[in-house]
Image (cartoon, rainbow over all chains, first blue to last red; front, side, top):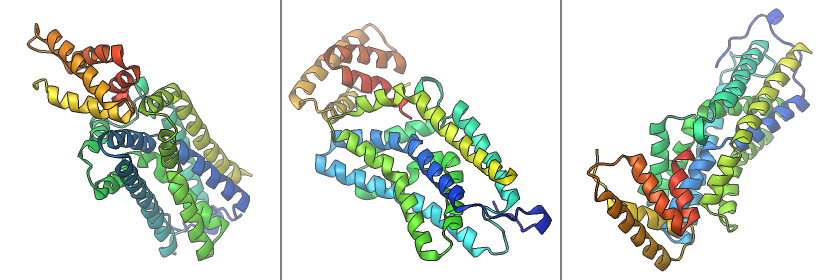
Length: 247
Length: 79
C-alpha cells in the first residue's frame, strides 16, 4: 500500500503521539496472540508427532515448527520495514491522513470479518476445507527438522489476511515510537517474538498433563470469545485511528 | 470411492492413543476390539460413507476411551 505524498493542505500535520502508537502496538500484539489458526495447527502437529515419535524428537520438531513460524513473521516485518524505509518518495507513516483513513477502513472491515467470518459452523475456521484438510494431514509427512520448519513457515500463510494489516500498523507504530535504527530493530524483534508466544503456551499446555482432547474442548468451548475479542480489538484500533485524526 | 483401509485406521488410532498417554498394550487391545466390531458391522454392507464409518468408529471408541473418541471425532473441527 504505497501512497504518494499529497499537498500539505490534504495531509494531517499533527504527529501521532507516542502514547497512541504504543497503544496500537499493544493492541496489535494482543490480537496476534488471540488469532487461533497457527496455534491450532501447532496443537494438531504436536499431538501427532508426540504420538509417532519419542518425547525428545517431538520437542525437537516442535521447536523447529516454532522457528519456522518466527522466521515467517520476521521476514514479513523485515519486508514491510524495507518498504517503509527505502522508498522516501512515498509517505508511509502514521501522520499521513489518507493512509490513516485507509488503515481505519481496513481495521473496521477486519473487525466485521472476524465477527462474522472467522469461525464457521461447528467451530471450523474461515479457510477452505481443502486447505484445512492439508493443514490437518500434513504432520503425517513430517520426519525431519526441515519439514517441521517449512510447515511452521507456511502455517502462517492462510491467516495473513488477518495478520498482515497488524504487522503493517505495528511497524508504523514502532517507527513512530522510536525512529532511531537500533531500538527500532529491538522493538521489531520483540514484536516478532510476541507473535509466537501462543505457540510456546500451547507447548506448555501439553506439557502440563493436558492432552489434545483438552485443547479441542477448550477451543470449541471458547470459540465465541476467540471470535468476539479480536473483533473488538480490531474495532478499537479503527476507533483510535479515526479518533486521532478527528481530534 | 475408496476401499476401507483397516491398517491405516489402526495406525492412526495407535498414534492418537500414544499421544494421549494411553498405555500401548491397553490401546492395542481395545483398538483390536474396535476394529473387529467395525468389521462385523461392515459385513452386511458393500458401501459406506466416510461420515457413517467415522460415526461407527466413534461409537465403538467411546466405550473404551472418551478422550480418544473425542479427538477422533473432532480433529477436523480444529481448523
